[in-house]
Image (cartoon, rainbow, N blue to C red):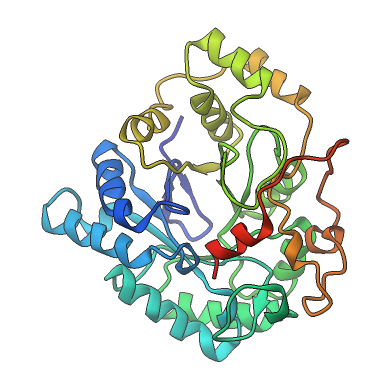
Length: 331
């Protein structure tokens, strides 16, 4: 299995990245340092994670200590929901570059089809309707300038990808979405593969315990556990390896050094084809539904509007984390 995927820009994106969402500010520097020492070469960040300055400090230390050079790493950041206006997009990436202490990022994403009023928190009363064509035009200028070596999107459904491709001068290189054995995104994956867009999986382990998620546990799924036992791997390694074999990059997150190393140890073995077929028997449920976006001001009247029908509800009522907890992560 290749350790990187080639984007439509010609650049190589490491197939396993290190996610920084929900890693506390006091530990993110040491976690990134340990991850890079363990072999990770892609760091996924965003201003919404509220730890991007600490990510920058970690990168600075890695470069100063000679662990890696800038060109050895692939760094992703994302456009804040309050800076979708075309005149605010360049300001947003300049702020991100200042936080990260970099001259460019390898990938810059529209964090989602969600917009809020500039200078406000991500709460329902601040929502606005998006204007993705206008925002994307400003993203293309970042690509032209070299401040972003590649541009893409996150949390875009099939319809939203198709709508973007219809107007884009520079097609998105990546669509970063929730993807794991419990929400496999088959339709979206097929569309991305057919249009040259790389699918990258955040929460590839289901993000257990993270605010905003509700539904079945990926790592407790009986099929995942069974395959882990058969192959003498951890359930997390099975879920991550499944992602690689499906042709997507994966962005696991952990601040535990042992788990960080385990999550990267997925290259010298594979899941046999007959066992890969067992994933087809897993009931599919989107775990991150982002229900608070369903609001008159957002233009989304239902979850089906937001996800363009690409959402499944569990038969029973799932135990969810409070939406207020989710909002605090992005406020």
